[in-house]
Length: 386
Image 1 (cartoon, one colour):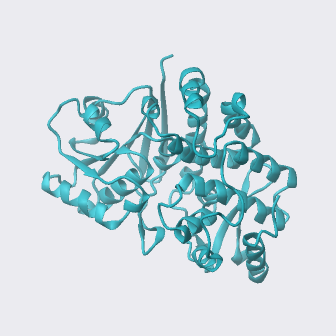
Image 2 (image 1 turned 120 degrees about the vertical axis):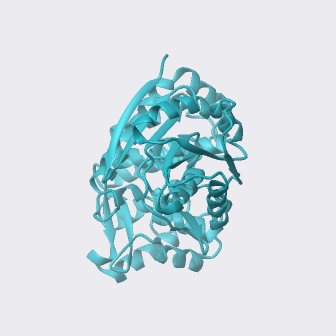
């Protein structure tokens, strides 16, 4: 099957185009696509895991590379500084093109560096992880972790071109597949149960398989060999949903884009309190979605059958959704991290909970602050669960 799909979006003043193909783009292909944008002076940014892919993309051309460490624990200012330093030493000007080859951490760091380099260089993504393909690459959120808080520093800076090469998923570790599927499930919950049904159909033949440590290699092989069309459809639907939402609220000034944070307030608090890098972002999001269902149940927003439908999906995919999370020993530390989450309105944390058909916002500014705090405490004590 030939895979070739184009999606075009507009995020305020930033157009963003997505090309989905089976194989990696070559540097000459990226240069050709860039012709109408102006000069093409690239810097290939990757980590030690995606360096072979970046070399393949370069096709042997003599272009500057920047290689940074891989993983959430390195999503920090020193890596941004490394990218900026390499760009400067390569002689890139404001018309330089930063090409990020990797997953969500790599794209967040590279896009932030590009957004501040000489007040704004250019950015291109080559997404190599499922999480990046279905979520992180699109929409323009950049950033890095600071003071132990997830993505405390960041900007809005969408990539002009995004390349999604499905072949890069073949060598993706099982744990990375699991991390990415959580973001796909998140978007499916927001979009509606028909999308969630489609996502769950990817594993319907593996109902007895153990997905808890990571996706079984036999499942991954089957997914890439015989269910590529369904996977492609899910990726395309996720991007279309996110693109539509972000396009209506590019810088999250209203309420539309906040919906994409379903599960994230709980997830970021889990990541921060457990120690950044101790749990993958995707698995933290899955755990956070379960907590969002409990909050929605307590507030009378999430119907019981929908909460059960969502939790069943999370369990079947092997996610840890029990409370407290095994990595959270200090509830007080977790609650402090939850209160420090950057998504606030009126000084109160913002939560997104599933409703009957999709999802909606809940935050202290529109209700009883004491009631909300009481419910959150009950959730963390395991008093509200299903």
